[in-house]
Image: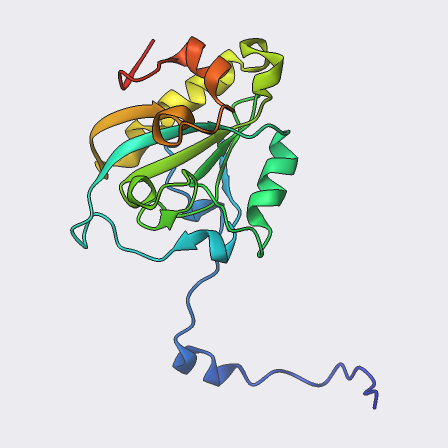
Amino acid sequence: MRLAAGPSVDPARDQINSLRLKASSTAAATECPATVDCTFVAGSPVGRQVADRPANGIRIDTIVIHDLESTYDAGVAGLANPTNPASTHYVMSSTGTVTQMVPAKDVAFHAGNYSTNLHSIGIEHEGYAAHGAAWYTEAQYRATADLHPGDQGRVGSSNVVMTDDVLPVRRDAEPFGQVLHQPGTGTTS
């Protein structure tokens, strides 16, 4: 059956408010500071867990730095794929553009370690570790550093770690870590 379009037909909008629908996510819904070019793209629903950290008593005390091993666009698309069991809170482009994919209050499955996921914020960086640290840019580093103050106190005395620090069998972040992070110390350089 096919119905012809009728310009005189209007939807019954008076029932919409009674449904109590949540507003859709927009760029304004990001948790990025105003100094960061940031948009929101929902991460995979199977790669995250709805939570209310830290209000629910689960502290966030770690930021885990990852490397996509892909381009920014491919990384965002892959992490938004509804069948992907992984997700992350933020994806950083080499130009400094940021995509938030999971609200900080929710758990993203990014570290391959549930306890780490539960207590951390995951930040993926566009790049290829196999190409060495030359892939990563000053703009990317600055946007990453600027993101932390925008955390608005959710991350307590933060420990910044690389993927290798929480999942030793993954080697994707090592060259990046040699530039930004002193592995195993929880400090940056």
